[in-house]
Length: 224
Picture 1: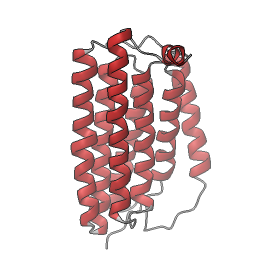
Picture 2: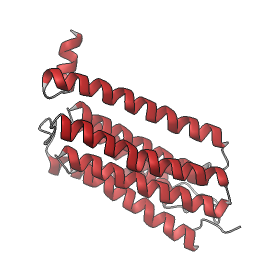
Picture 3: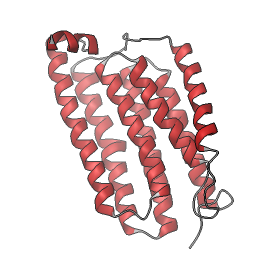
Picture 4: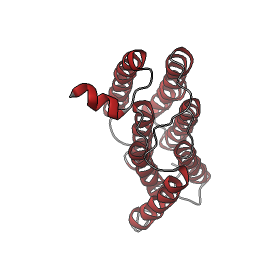
């Protein structure tokens, strides 16, 4: 069986894929347009499907191949296209004006979080020949960038994208470190996430139709 070490071809592909996933998270953090939020998330999910396919090829795992295909179809294509049709075209959500911090400041904090992820996760010694070691700090950085997106954005849709980016980061680390997990567990997590996304999109669309633009401050006002 081939290895996922950094010296192997699958390991190089996986490392490069993880870097591109991190860059897509940075691109989402530095944007203000809802259409770009969805485009960056879709591209990130396609890259995640490639990562899952790479691990499936090395592990000779039909279950991971199925999971990679579901990730591509549902997260890479289905959710971004459905959300774009509902939120951008029908509800005319264009520009995210609800920012708790400037884009430059957000990117600086994001870079600091990436450094922190490398210092923390990169210090752990992983078995050579079993995993591409760069993926672990990169996936940790993606999780932190997703959390930062949720913090610096006030609009509910933008915060939802940040949450989905966090999930992608967790998924990236999981398919590398726990490729032997039963397929039913991984698929169950995937479908739970998709169900939560659909429910949240329905709630956001309903509120947006009444309020025009939905933010967390308005949602707290409704609760009061």
